[in-house]
Length: 606
Image 1 (cartoon, one colour):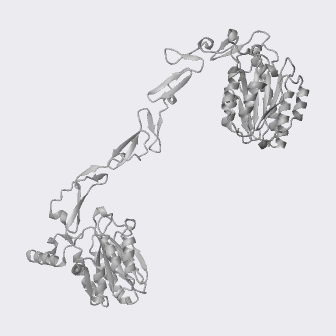
Image 2 (image 1 turned 90 degrees about the vertical axis):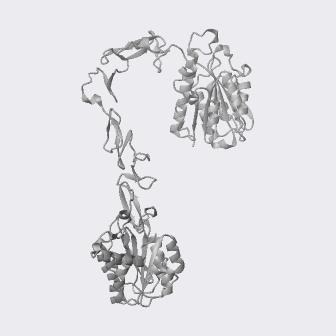
Image 3 (image 1 turned 120 degrees about the vertical axis):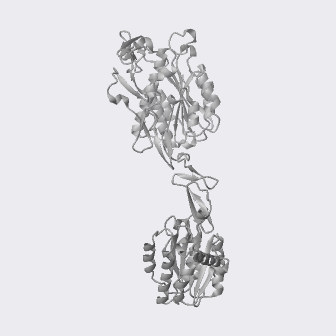
């Protein structure tokens, strides 16, 4: 960036004066500049001399074309420290700048000129403080006015400032050091270094310096080709576009800014770009909300003219009628007629389905009651099962908790109809090995079983759950140890109780147990692993396993138990369980849940 040399400009002035006696004929004006005055207010500057410096700045500003899009001016003063008087973004009128300059109170200390240049480069000429971005090509000019020798180094920091694009004018008065002025100023030095003999002459110098800042209006001197507007700079120009447009790569033509292109508009449906801004628009059948971005479907049903017999449903194109459950929409699209749901759906009633308006219900033959599932009928007596409980006796259970486990087992026994022809109970304890406490055919009454449970000794070693499952399948449910033949259709139930991770693989024998027809329940406490519990449990898994640190969540082991594990009647010789045998499983589940609820209330396991 070069300014018109002083000698050439003076020659231009003389030529113009000879040709035309009126100065107004000269096409010369100040282009947009970013100017920062750096004023020495050290103790060596006497009060009346500082007043002259005020007039110097005011006179130069008075002849500048100041404004946010024209020349911007900032002022800092320095001595041993730097003080910002006003930045490039503070004022945009001469009157405001003049008031601020007249209010300056000199610092009257040392002369740290290098510090002041550093501040100008790092602060005063930043975009944050009002300097135009470099791509705008607005000249950045620092005018340093000093009367003495700097007390710090200026050469290096001034070089950094010049390399950063700042053009430095060094104005020295009276005692100023010429070598320091030359070290600060931009080249060519004859155009940027000025030494004024006294403060009285500085105002006269101001007029000469003003001419340095006056350039030819390049927008008027040549065909600039700018589509919208041309901005003149010293010895050059650049093109600008109107608001809402952006400059194309040719640097001259302009295109509308697509404000929707960056995707940050937030419009829910459509974004409409118009001259640098945008507006949101909704699809047909929707209206724009107050936030001017989101859309809500128009509620056509609220207009009250739909004539639907039951329900009106708004859709983007208008509305449609909908009937309540159990009704069918007629051809007129408005009225509804009841549906015979017993003939139209898989009702699942065991005996008979009865349709009612919009619904149906199941009924049972006389003398039989409907089960809680609302579909099957109660026609069975009390059922019985073969139950083997597999109890974790590892070291992690601890003696006091093992006593609570015994109580848990005996509470289950209390609710069972134990007899040779009724429910049979076997008990297995495991740790690093497996031990049958008593088989299914050992005891024939609840009291005998409970007594044997309380005498059971705590094994207190490892946790070989897989080995225990193998023992249960191969021995506990064998006819030799009291399990009834599969042909009798007596449900076989295995209940595994554990408090930790197994030290061996459980997957193979858990699967074999279920494949052999054993309904597996898994109850875990403490550090039991949910993945292992799920591997042990029968399908559906969620109804056959439970886990809790203190039994607080073990009150819902199985729901709709019969529907999930009991096949329907009438399957011939391939049938595994009859409905009455399923009743036995349901009864076992109900009793077990009751025990778990009681244990929860008493807070036995902690």
